[in-house]
Length: 306
Ligand code: GLN
Figure (cartoon, rainbow, N blue to C red):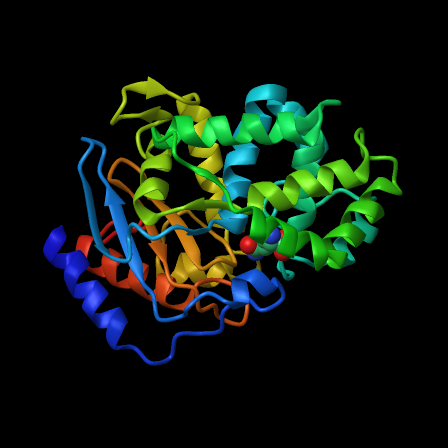
């Protein structure tokens, strides 16, 4: 495995077309695009890494995977009265479908869906309490208490968050919100601003590899059925309107973020985190996707066959 990762890393470092860093969040626009990291966590607890795998980056929308898991734990199937389970085929920050569907987002991974998920888990609590709960969960599944939030990124999102604010207020106009819109948005911006390394993220994804159990700690996080369902949502919706392309090229459930990270799950085989800040036109990591494509070619890990 180490040889494969070293080779992929060398190939990626040679590529000159690296995509564009997210510039609509000023703090993310400052990140050096010439970085690449990859980590593979195996069910037996081994972790293999190459490149900038210990560098912290903003996990952004990858956090939506964790908030969905928390929401399912708290509310069970009632979550599906707040968000749907269908790919949207529209950009991650799109508002158009909300109007047709009475303010109900198509899935939990587009921005509107993740904002609705935050509202569903707050249950009248203060943003600080909900954030503490989210952080505690992420630390628990990654088995790492050092994970935290990058306050500068959160403030940067808050100051430039007009689009997300409009999504939230639009949903609230249908009477769908149970908490003050500003509290929900503040919580959303902060959970998107969690900082993690590829190593930490790969470890956080392990529970989705082994039927809901984090096999490196032996602790069950969710039921086997829930792990399978979360993986299916990641496959269909985890890369927004690029989900079909990602399934075609990589063939694994995956969740991307505009910080340039991708968490991919090869059920029964491995949890993989890649990071490179340059994005394609849809907002998914360009080199991250290319690296996963190579990894799957080397390992035969696609869920669709070798
Ligand atoms: N925090 C980002 C936003 O709300 C998340 C988007 C993403 O990672 N695709 O725009």
